[in-house]
Image 1 (tube, rainbow, N blue to C red):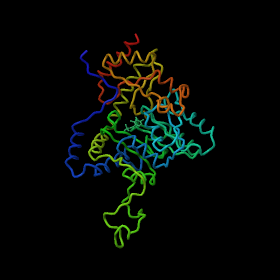
Image 2 (spheres, helix red, strand yellow; image 1 turned 135 degrees about the vertical axis):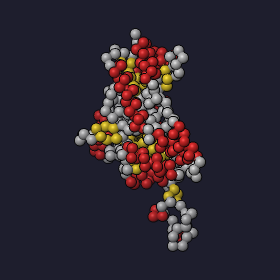
Image 3 (cartoon, rainbow, N blue to C red; image 1 turned 90 degrees about the vertical axis):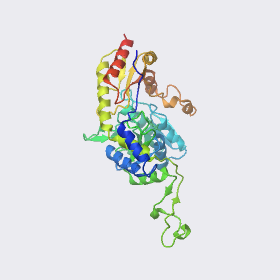
Image 4 (tube, rainbow, N blue to C red; image 1 turned 180 degrees about the vertical axis):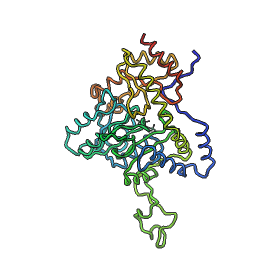
Length: 394
Ligand SMILES: *Cc1c(COP(=O)(O)O)cnc(C)c1O
């Protein structure tokens, strides 16, 4: 029993990562320097989007998206209850109303048919947008969501926090990377240590829409513009002759300070270079779980082996979840539960959400457990996890 704690997720910081951060600390820029731009460009390349905007964290990314899309008090937005609360909270930051739609029991993703039912039940224009989540790393079929969104003039924010490197196959047989901007207006990623790419804190917005991109750049830094062609005040007022003086800038709308630092970007950039290796290892781990659980009577469901899945989490559904969770914990295996349905959080209950509203999400929550899943999980440790689970149900 000398085994170390096996967590459900864990960052991997290498000597190269540390060097990258040290070099940035010794450079002229601690924030908004060259590493930010480099990280943005490499990340956009990685997912296949035209633009990327680095921000302070994934939640800030969601908030800026809602601001850029113009979410106003009373605007109704659809999302899934099986996600981190931030996917819904961003709508509330702008005073919008969160309308939950149930999940599909097999994919654990927002059920497009449930979203369609909501849309059909109200006059067009009632809903403004939809926030599907690539939960656990499994990509939503964004092509289908785009078709639905166009029918009802909705915008789409893809919450891709779990799925950097993930993809789905579209109707023409083409790979569509999560966050590539081909279907969603905007997508977001997080660089929290449990996510694929760790930067301490950090987030990224990807898009292929130039005007949204420009809005986001401005909103990220107080709503300030340094682009002369956008200036609203006159050169005279600014204090120049014929041209605006070099010091001049304008705060044109109410933005925030949601910037990422250059040393975090250096860490993210260094981690991004290894992202494909990490993803391949995650898929290997998933395969092994899948094979070990196939046909086992205690398994009610599992994430399984799915094309394009990025395996942020490996989720299984079991009988006696509490018993298993406690047994694993007693054996130093810290599995986790993703997620307590957001609509049943006390904050959301005040808007009238209650048990029974999302039957599939609620049933899923009774049985789900996320097993250790991170690239540096050793074969030996995964064997310990597997053996303990099988032992528990004997
Ligand atoms: C982590 C996460 C977020 C929030 O990201 P932070 O960087 O922690 O703010 C949002 N949505 C999902 C699905 C996440 O997993």
